[in-house]
Image 1 (tube, one colour):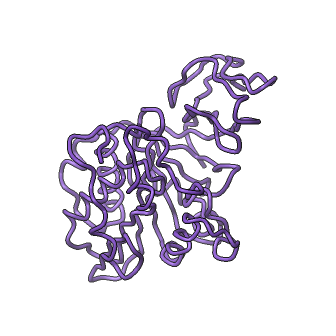
Image 2: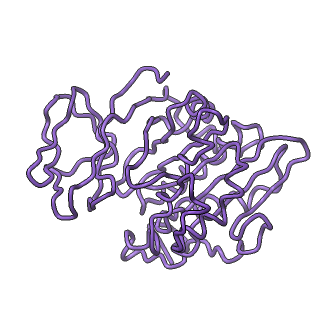
Image 3: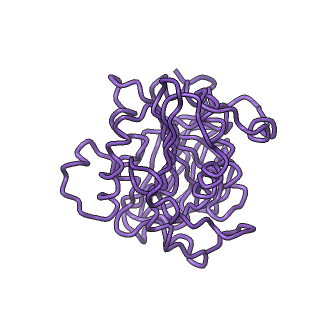
Length: 316
C-alpha cells in the first residue's frame, strides 16, 4: 500500500489492542495532573498523511509530562482498503465519518460502520479537553486550520502557531464534523478543537506538515519537548485569519460546474467574478478580495463544493 511516498504506508494492525481506551488508539499518561488531549487521524481513510504522522509520533514518544494523551487512528477500516490508484474511493465505507457528530450520536439508530466507530470513540471524545484532527485536501494547497467561532478556538490556533492560514468556519450543512461536536461547539464548555488540512491527499509533504503540527500542538499544551526540526524548520509569518461567509453545495450531482480550475486559498480581487454554475444559477464572488476555499474536484449533492471567505485582520 503506497501513496506518493518514499516508503510503504504504516501497517496499523499493531495498534489494534494498544490501549484499553479504544481499539487503534495509543495512550499516554503523565505523572502530573493535566488535560485530556486527543489527536485523531484518518477519519477519512484515504487521508493517509495523518496515519504516517501518528505512527511516527507513536514510535518517537515515550512519555508526556502531564495529563493524558490519546493518538487515535479513527477509520482504520477504510484506511486498510485504501488504493492509491483510486485515492478518492477509500474515503469511507458507508457514511462520511466526519459528518456524524450530532448531539444524538449515541441514540440515533444509525447502524453504519462509521456510526458504530464514532460511538466507540465518543466516551473518549466526551472527556477530551483539547483535540487536533488531521486531514488532507483533494487539491494540493497551503496547509490551513479550521476553527470554531469562540475565542478559545482562536486562542488554541494562535498558541500552536502553525499553520499560517486560520479559517473560522461554521461547518457543513450535511452534518457535524468531529471538531463541531457539542463540547467543542457550545459556549458552556471550555474544550477546544483544531482541524488541520495538511496539504493534498497524495503529497508526501502533507505527512511532514501533519507530524510538525502534531508536535507543535503538544508543545503548546506543555505536554512534550518536540524535536528541534518540528519547531525551527517552520516559517513563522503572521497567521492570516479568514472567515467563511458562504458555503455552497450543488443542487444535484450533475448540475455544478466550475468556470475554471481554482486553487485553494485563491484570492479573487473583483466582486462579481464568475466562479461556477449550478444548473441555471450563476455563482459569482459576492465581494471584493474574496477567498475561494477548498474547491471540490467532483462536487456532489449535499456536500460542500466550495466556500467563500473574507480575510480579516482580527477575529473577535
